[in-house]
Amino acid sequence: MEFELDEDERALAGLCRDFATGRIAPQVERYLAEERCPTELLREMGELGLMGLLIDEAYGGAGVSTVAFVAALEEVGRIDQSIAAAWQAHLTIGSLPLATFGSHAQKERWLTPIAEGRRLAGFALTEPSAGSDASAVTTRAERVADGWVVNGQKMFISNAGTDMSFGVTALARTVSANGEETGYGNFVVERGTPGFTFGEKLRGIGWRGLDTRPLSFDDVEVGDDHLLGEGGGGLGQFLSVLEVGRISIAALSVSLGQAVLDLALDYAGQRVQFGRPIGRHQAIQFKLADIATEVEAARWMTYRAAALRDAGRPFRKQAAMAKLKASRVAMWAASEAVQIHGGYGYMTESPVARFFCDAKILEIGEGTNEIQHLVIARELGCGD
Image (cartoon, rainbow, N blue to C red; front, side, top):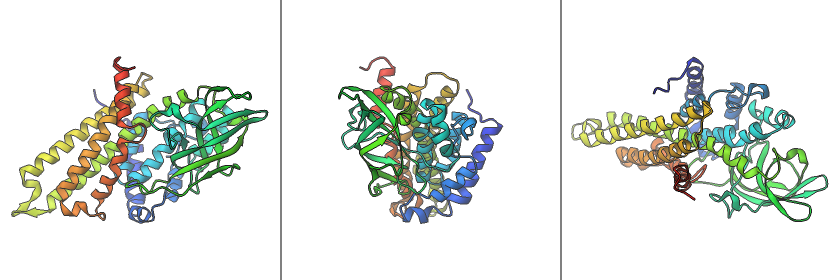
């Protein structure tokens, strides 16, 4: 089976390739050194129609296939993982809860400016004591006469604190007026809402250009029109959207694997030891061959999961497998690429070192690899 891109999908990938090489690459070292999210570039992506790829055209999006989205993400991720991470979080967990469960009025109010690239979207799930166990969130939304009052803390939330951010969609336990827990809800909380604040940008070993912060909700009042879908089913809503997020992390992983392979191939052709380029030595050739093979295998698994979603078929297992495989490959390939570069690869100024630092989060984000094992096992019928 071939996953050949059609004409429109090739055009989208080409557009993203040109933007990444022409606009992102010349600026990447500067904004990473500043450790800031380059929202000016994200706004340019919005002008090109790239900030609503998975959103219906009726709400300002492009409505492309998941396969096209993966191909586009590959092109950006090969140049910089930080801006690609901000972009994919906006396109998937940031936008899809509204796109999938929002009412027409909610979509017109919040989804359209997100899809048009005028606002940056994020989703607030993780808490200081809740991550892999999403059901353990303690943020509460208590029912009051004219809406809800939200209280709680979130951690490691991306895209919430930039000058382009619209706010977040936050998962909370719902509590009735008499104090009874009634399930979970996803609530849209706009930036500037009284009681909604965010802390300083967190500094990770990689993704230095991604804006990630802790959030606080202190007696945040929102109306009923801020709740997505039916009350009580918010956790299931998020988990269904997360499956697409796993495909996007797999795509980021593939792009990183390809990036470090390209860097290693170039370096192996130039670096001379023992009288000839190191790429002529079998030890290096075998490393390069292994990286290329594993990246290609991860790519096929990722496109397979995307194609299943496009066909309307179940893809939960394939998405988890793709994320598990591709993130492992990215981490390993980055390490091998640094080894090929030797001392030059260890220096933080080298692009391969940057990708090495970026790789680790791919085994953690959108569900740790340990969680992917559990998802796969359950899909095989041997889990709880």
